[in-house]
Image: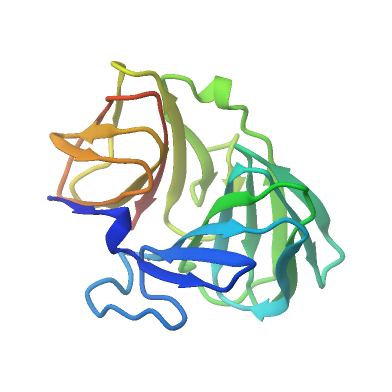
Length: 232
């Protein structure tokens, strides 16, 4: 089963400095049919104006992954962490027992990103933050694990949940397979480009909710950049 969720039908809120589209229920947007997908709880498609951002605010018991599409985001938190994550790269925050953080676009250009929240396997634990560069060229024609709750994914950013966040860049006409497994749930969004996934076509920023599929076969109709959450 692969359900196409067109970008035009997503939840939407424009706050001026933040133009946000919600794949799942979030803040003032509520759709009882789109509360979560397995342990994937939030996928926001955010556009943040220059010299603006999210002021300090708290979280707990959530794994928060930020995939920067264009521009950059600068993170600061109550643990003293600070860092800038640029386009194509990823940051993760394990909220654990509680953390206060801020995310700012300090650039002179608009920043666009995917903000992904995944429920942790176990509540509590010390909060933490980390970031890593994932050059798009190193993801060319292959699925690369960006963040993972599985110890065998040694090159990925660690998260405390039974899930993986995977990325790939695929040239038009190329096909990439991913062994999801019929017991898992997947949610895929092309950041750019049109793709075909097991016969279902999606445009840039559409969502694909996937279940009961052993192998995902992703073909790029146009040059594409995809992000997938492999969820429990």
